[in-house]
Length: 139
Image 1 (cartoon, one colour):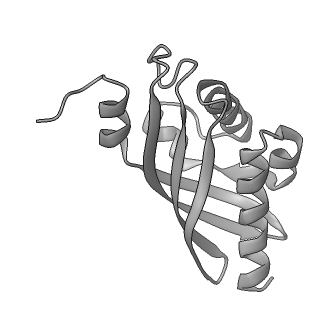
Image 2 (cartoon, one colour):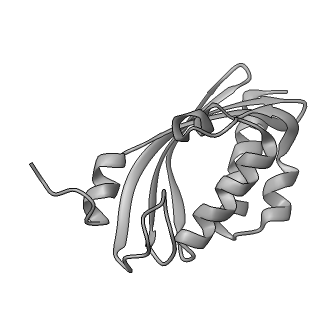
């Protein structure tokens, strides 16, 4: 697949996530894929656990929206710099709902094969998120 086709797969996934369309999200993935992002949270990096991760995120920020700020592709990899915004209305990383509005950035690396995402690894600006949730204060 071309880098443009790989970028289209990732864009389709992110747009489906913004719509909270889990069926369309699932359709973007190879169920045998790897999800190293989950290891950061002490969770086995399986497709089923990634679906649970996404559903919990959708519940935590039901009005959440991910805006793509930049997307770059090379070979089978697509990198995305994004901004997430939403209202914290449900548990997020074991933090009860605060009803605070949040806005934080992240970077994702997605690997694509045969028209499906086969690997996801993201880094989020956790410090900004935790400050906005009132879990930590500015130093």
